[in-house]
Length: 115
Image (cartoon, rainbow, N blue to C red):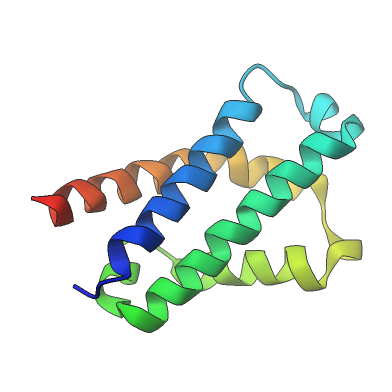
C-alpha cells in the first residue's frame, strides 16, 4: 500500500458522504432549482474523481477495488471541462444509483487497510 492510499480513500469517503448528506430528503426538483446545492454536489464529485485519479496512479490495485474507476474519472472530467454539458438528471442518477455503493466499498477498503 502506498502512503497516500488511506488519505485518498478518506477524501473519497468524505466527499461521497457529504453529497449524500446534503441531498438527504431533497428531490430532483430541489437539486435543479438550488444552484448552491448543485455546485456543492458537483464540486464534491470533482474531488471524488480527482482523488480516484490520484489513487489509480499511486495504487492501481486499490483503485481497482472501488469499482469502475475510469468511469468515475471520466465523470469528473465532464463536470470540470464540460460544465455546459452537465445533465442534472444524470448527476441525480449517479447520486441515487451509484454513490451509496461507492461509499460502502471505500469504507470497506479503508477498514481492511487499517487493520
